[in-house]
Image (cartoon, rainbow, N blue to C red; front, side, top):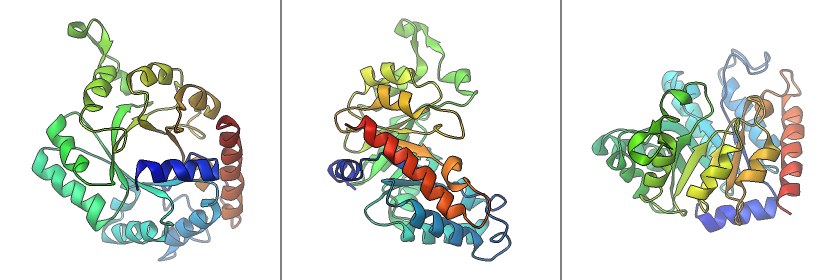
Length: 270
């Protein structure tokens, strides 16, 4: 999917919502647990319930890889069920030397034809370059995460760079490897004011923002500091939507929550 196509979807739906399909088999409704197609049935119901209110789906591959071959099959079938109008993300956080990254890129852009994949930039440009070589595909680089461990490295001050934090250097360097047409960044939502500083470094790139909803991030703050002229945001909500209700009415509850996010987003896009 091209940037123009993504922007058109956002404007048309007045939404920049990404629904995270982080489907834990132990958390799906009890009437689906133990069923051989329980996870896939759950995912399909969630997609049907939310597709009118979101522009993107993010599949966290760990929840599928941990189930072995069956999990990979579920991931593949889930991806195939998502409408072609929606931007699809493999949240895989891959990153390795070039020849290995080439195989990762093939996995998530060819074998599983996602629009985008998340990658870790720690090993440098040659670990990211194979992903960027695919036309009309997106590489989503970890920029600043919101977990407690982010302070271990990401916020370290660099003496050689006049106290610039490490994550700022990562953003400045990485944004030169691609363009706003094929490169996004993951930026956590729980300290949304950081987005104001991030937008000074990468004003035009799309940001994938997790942490809204169950993790406590504020959609209002993320939108205030993160929106740009093309919206430039994909705000991900996972548990808050897919596990909004643990009973047989889970899909209806997911629709209600997703619609609420969409309506709030529409107000910020005016």
